[in-house]
Length: 331
Image (cartoon, rainbow, N blue to C red; front, top):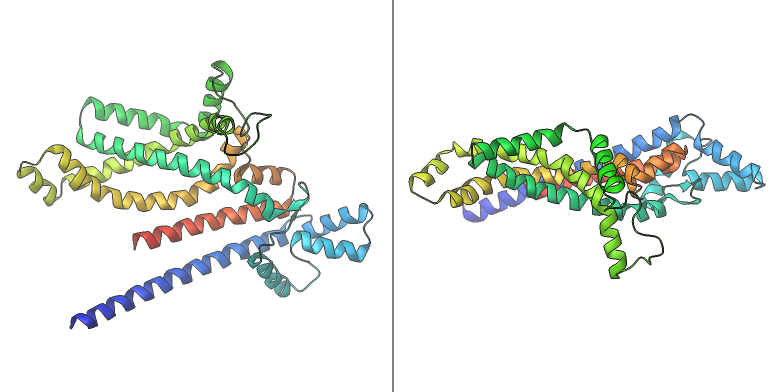
């Protein structure tokens, strides 16, 4: 086949792959939005009727109350369900996720304020856990003996402790007994949020425990995964050839084993960024970090159906987008 024809074939194949990937992304997003819509419709107590009753009790005229309740909840159950579904899709596309009754604010505003803290904690803790676990896994695979045993035992211990138990232990030890770290909140009272040193230092102190909790929960998985991949790659012919040539062990470990282990681990890392959003509920609730997990916990506890479903929807979308980025990056 001529070179130009081969390039055209490859380009066409890449284009079809991209189109299939984007089509799958759109299908997943529509499915997530549809699930959120039907959850609202199937909830006991009907959020629309609850909102309407609250407005009527506060003295709002009926027609105005119906109009406001429809805006706040994002749908009207008295309208045909098909029409209501497409209205809900239209509202989502325009950033209308409904209105929170407990916070008296649009859900999208609350979610936009909470998301940065979840993103910060997830990105920092997961990245540190990945780097630390990757290095420990390579060391464990290359240094068989006491060091390998020590790394494996440490990883098994932290991998066996439930997340809520580990968070409680860290909170009691560092926040109650030693008292070197704050146990809740984002920063000390009286500080002005912004790019100033006192606020940044206070923020770092308050985020240390939740980040440390995530880190200790996550690094054993990366260590085990890297170790197993490295041990399998060690048996490959190109590694045996490199050692037979007399190359230094450090170069064999980094250039021949480490690089080949890194690709599947990086792919798993991109998937994990999205998945970790869904695991933020307990940690943020434990340390009172006003992120998406804490917002979801508060909304569900107060039976704020609209905010609960909206926050849950955003977390699902984050997982889907994380998977999409992983697919594209791997390709």
